[in-house]
Amino acid sequence: MLSLRIGRSCTSSSPLLRLVAIQHRSYTAAKPQTNARIVNSASAQKQIQDIENNASKILRAVQLRTAERRKLRSEMTETFSTAEDIQRMKRLKETEDIQAAWTEWESTRELLNETIALLADEDPAMCAMAQEEYISLLSTLSHLASTKFPELLVPNSSTGHLSALMELKSGVGGSESSLFLSELLRMYMRYANVMNWKAALVGSNELDGGGTKDAIVEITGSGAYDALRWESGVHRVQRVPATETSGRVHTSTVAVVVLPLVEEKSVNAEEDLFSMDDIKLEVMRARGAGGQHVNKTESAVRLTHIPSGITVSMQDERSQHQNRRRAFQVLRARLMDLKIAAEIKSRRDVRRNLVQGADRSEKIRTYNFPQDRITDHRIGLTLTGINYVMEGDGLQSIIDPLQFHHNESVLADMLDEVPS
Image 1 (tube, helix red, strand yellow):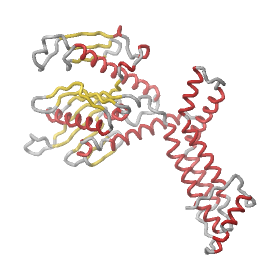
Image 2 (cartoon, helix red, strand yellow):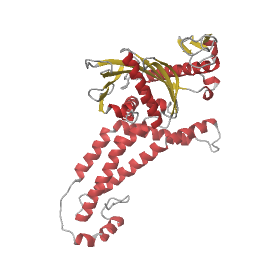
Image 3 (tube, helix red, strand yellow):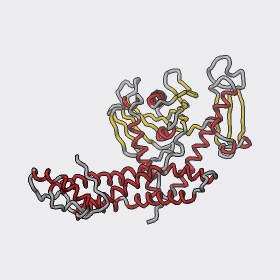
């Protein structure tokens, strides 16, 4: 497509417009003359106005961000050496993309005004070029308003760098629940591999007849928590167990809790989530199968965080030191989870989150094997192809819509606070 970019002047006497007309005079002489108008000036102005009206709050929010950016620039000192300057520079860096998008919006809006002036040109070639240019520019304007600006207005996740600690516990359904837990565990570990994260089984309680009663898996990698946090809740499976002779469909459940994993080495003392004065530490002999070492040494550890009442027990490792490290890791993850939940609640005192991932007792998803169907009840998403999801490859097709709805909710909350 031949693209026509008009300068600042929008009058027919502009030297630039005259030059364009002269350049295309030989072209128009060979073309059939027509006065057809795909879009006239009035309808073009209305289409632009509709875009601006539909995105009025979004545009206002972007304007406020760019105004804040100008204010930050004006407050910078000449030396750029103060602590406040460092914070301002960081904020300026964070808003570079939204400033660039707003500059593109203003440029596109100006070009649209100039192009509209040519829609009624008597020269058919000039008019046709203006029509093509108008359609292209209007598409850019619409994309900025409906897609680009909303994406940039949603703040970067404060937990985007965190890894994840997943706890899985069998629920109703007996042995079938434990078997499904093993399959979910395999799904998450394969998904971690697809995402180039590292997955390590921290502890598990495997049953003699097959299946796993409960398990804790550590998934390390940037973005792991933000992706997997939507898995928190009750997962329901409907299928015919291998031991079922009459072919009846059984329903079983597995509870999943996803916690933000905070490594001890990455936490400064003043930023830690607890004080050792608030921790009750107990050591005891481990219980259960495990050989002669178990029950003979006090290797098991139990931590109690007195202010919150959170208790963590760990006995899967052979030494007390290893169990103690794991126990503190789980405690720190649970306290971080409480902190994040409290922050989310404080930001949403009116609007409820579209994805209720924090409610661990809520049934979030159903895996219906006879119908080859997976349904996520939080957003009404239904997909077919259970095996593809259970292999880990298809899980992203569920996580992406959940993340999209979350971003929509965050944006809606933010726009509610934008002044008219």
